[in-house]
Length: 66
Picture 1 (spheres, helix red, strand yellow):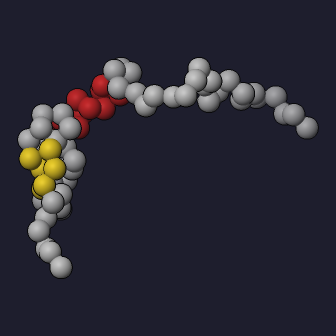
Picture 2 (cartoon, helix red, strand yellow; picture 1 turned 180 degrees about the vertical axis):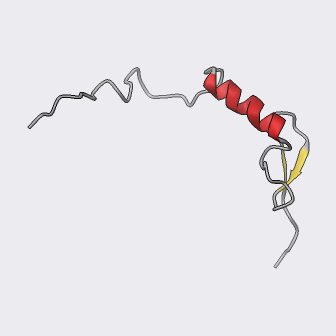
């Protein structure tokens, strides 16, 4: 069985990151890269594609349908 620690590329800057406890922000290399990625999601620069125009809240209502 191999005990080598995997190394991945930081999604933001592409620096190598060890996938172990020595890299607390994994898969990011730093808190800075982690926050850059979060900001891109918050600004909707990144998104997960959907199959249609249906929004999760389209069928939601505060009224009780009993």
